[in-house]
Every structure is written in C-alpha cells, then in structure tokens.
Length: 411
Image (cartoon, rainbow, N blue to C red; front, side, top):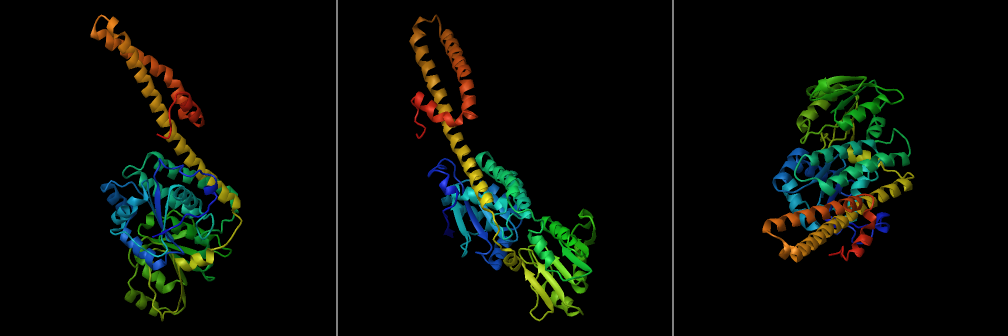
C-alpha cells in the first residue's frame, strides 16, 4: 500500500505529535486510484458489512468499514502496524492493490471528515455519501469496542458534514444519482433496479427531470418502496425490464451478477430497440455482451463525468478546522485526565503522610482507619470542583495547573 501524507490545511493547524496518545489508522481503496474491477473483488471478499464487522469483533478489532460504489474505507483506532492484521480479518487476506492509500494520525482524522462531507467524492458535497457514512458509523457502533475517542471521531465527522453543506453550492443536481438520471434518453419509462439509499436517490432524480418518465422500481421487497410517484415491482421482474424498457439503472447491493452473462445475452437478443443500461452497483450487476445493442455506463464512467472543480475553499478550511478541533479535544482530554489522576494521587499521598504522623496519638487502629477515611473524603470533596472544571471549560488551563502542582504532563 502507498502512504500519503499531503500538505493539507490541517497540517498547518495541528502541532506535530498532537495525537501521540490516540492511535488512528485508515486504508482507502477508492476511485479513481483503484480501478473498478479491483474494488469489485474487494467488495466480494468483504461480504456484507455486518458479517465483516462480526469477524473483526470476534478477533477483538474495533473497526469502521465504509463500502460504496466508488470506495472502500477501513479505519481502526490502532497503530499502522496493526492494519495488516485487521485487513486480513475483514477481507480474508491483506490486499496489496495499486492505488490504495494508508493514513495515520491527523491525516487519517481529516480524511474521514472529508469523506463524510463529500469533499473526496467526484460530485463534491454529494448527499448520498453522508447517509452511507452515518449508516457505516451506526454499524460500527454495534460491534466490539467502537467507543470513546474513536466513536467521538465518527460522530464529529458526521456533525461537520452537516454543517459544511452551507458552504458548498446549493445545487440538487450535484449527485451521482442526478448524473445517472441525466444519461437516460428521452423515454416514457425507466426502470430502477434496487431501492437502497442510492436507488431512492435515482428514482427521485428521474422524477425531477424536466420531462420525467414513468419510473418503475424493482426491489426484493416491493412493499417497502416508499418513494412517491413510482411503480413498485418485484426484483424477480428485472428480466422483463431489460427486455422491454428503453433505459434501466441498476443500483442493487448484490454480491454477484444480477443476471448471468448467457441469460443476459438471450434477454438482449430479443430486444427490438436499443437499451441504455447504467450500472451503479459494486460489484457491477451486469457484464454486457460486446455485440449487444446497448449503451452501457458503469459507476466509474459516471464518476468520470461527475468530476469537476467547484469553489470549495471555505468548505476545505471548515473541515480542516473541525478535524483540528477534534484532535485538540482528544489531546486535551488525555492531558487533563492524566493531570486529574496525578492530583488525586498527590492528595492520597498527603493523606497517608498526615495519618502516619498522627497515628501514634490515636487510641486504636479503628481510629486510624476513621481518620484516613475522613481525610480522603475531605480531599476528594475539595478536588471535585477543580477536576470538573478541568474536564470541561478549563481544559486549556491544564498546563498552568500542572505547573503549579509540579506535575509533568508529558510523563
């Protein structure tokens, strides 16, 4: 795997070594660096997210796994040395693909923030990625020890993504779904195979076209289709769609070809009009025959069309500052935690010293225990307020308090 540590805005905000106490590592297999066929193989090896996370859970590895049509992202709250083991558990082997990128520390933090905000998507700020990121974070939270600072990182990335949208151009057509819809020819009927997050977005994008077609949505559970204005169909009717409709957009989560090659050839051979087939699935739902009269677009072809440069400097800076704020919060929490622990340790040492000094004047051993308990209770009551203050709004004053008590925060 390649390592990438770009000179990002974040690197100018966060001091070197700021995350020494919080390990975070990530690996990206993403368009365009990793080709579609390689990503398809990874998705197949990964299986369902729930199954992959269950394997990680059994191995004692907290993990965040995001798998979309254009990227697979893995993050663990551990050092880079442990990434290969995590990948072997998740995929059955540790992939060594050209174009994959590994990150750690502040770079990994900022990358996750940028993914959630849609700044790494071909369509900058696309809305679907935040939904997918949020679902991946929720899945991670139900397995293993995805908590503490790691869970806080995922939550902070989601919160930042929501706020950064105000700094990106407001254009509902800026989505992969809208681009797919725009590639369909003028037609009276269009089929959508699948009704997950992207399937719903595609159906809505078709209905938002200037001359919207009749949209037929094919799903494994047609009774669950809740998009207004569409015709619900069973996915078992997909062959009919390929045989009769002028355009079909496929966005299923199937891990194998939706219709095998030979059967697909037979279906297409019976057509009398050309077919526009837009395959947004990963792995792809179809492998169209070379001699078929179709216009075929896979997800990478759509991404090529989507890539564009739009003004986003404000969004870049906002995301970098949000990532830096999270890193600062983690750093301060670790420092203040150590400071508070040292304060109580000093207090306990002082109590023990005083009790030892007066032990000879006590009438019985029971009196010593009572005196020690009373002294410890008094010191904890006194330290409760300062400890609460340092854990909250006074966190930035940890260094001053530490110096006053002769505590080295770097120990």
